[in-house]
Image 1: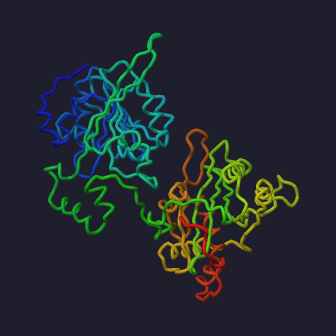
Image 2: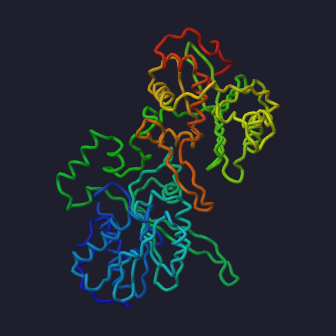
Length: 487
């Protein structure tokens, strides 16, 4: 039941970019751009107006973690209601977290860390995803398919976010691909036509979405000192200036990275060279995938260069050593120039589930027998801290006779170098996450970089030894020669 409330004109309640928000009935609205533009404020106000005026409205406040909703979306809507003097028309509940209007309309809170609870929400008509870029496409599909009620005059989902993506290239980020890849425009409306079957007849159904871009410059109420802070990012942090000030797409930067000196300039196109041996490194963990990284190396003019040309990271149910080796054999079926296997020395241990004398590496060698592989394992594993410092020195260009190039298609490896954090003790911080389907917990980052660490420390053994003891090496690990071709 609608309640008659006398509001100011909508255009007087919000900043200019959001003048059309209240009357917009599109299925999805993307509220994105820089910080301080009023995206959150405008969304809160639309929710309040809808709760008061719609005949039926049931919204879900969504964030990646449930416990963060109370201090963000929930408190924001509550404070806005009080500032409007409308608190007598609403009831605020903390457990469970909800805001209910006296007419029966309401919003409830759900976190993506407990996405299964979203499926149980009865007849939702609206969703607000705050920090929408933090969720996965799987999360989105779970929520959006829940919004299917016939009780409201229209269904709608609003995203509010800064345009940064936790992928090696934001063009590969699911929100960008789904909503933005078709245009360079920031503000637009797009309609998608889909053929569906209705009562035995095929019919084309349209649904639309609107993109609303904004920055702090669209907010006339922002304090001058805040504006100065955003502009000063141009001097102090080009990344923050690009994403938070200008509101342009970028790849999320994390603080306290383990691989501090890695930059996207270390990523390039790489190609398989048939005249060079292949070097593979394995990581025994099976979740989220079993890891194999594939490299080639050569020394030219005194510089040993290792180029990662591929990675094989097969998820469940293909996350087995046998299947991974079969995929390698398929991709490099014609290779004749030798194969070297690297990895964690501890995987050489006897496995009670295997025959006596067999282990992870003997199995890999058997599966890859046609390539006549040779194991190159350390006598003992290099320390995490020392190998990390060594590889950081290579990326920084401080070890003049060593170079690393990561292939642009090796997206899991690149993500490791970009997003793996350093723990307080200087080791790798292996952040864990849970697969929503299988409930299996696994380390989000670190598998490809672990595999690569062992390979780099072996192929660059002379350089690594020199780095550890501060000495000088005289012999390169590969003889210098002129290649048949370069790429």
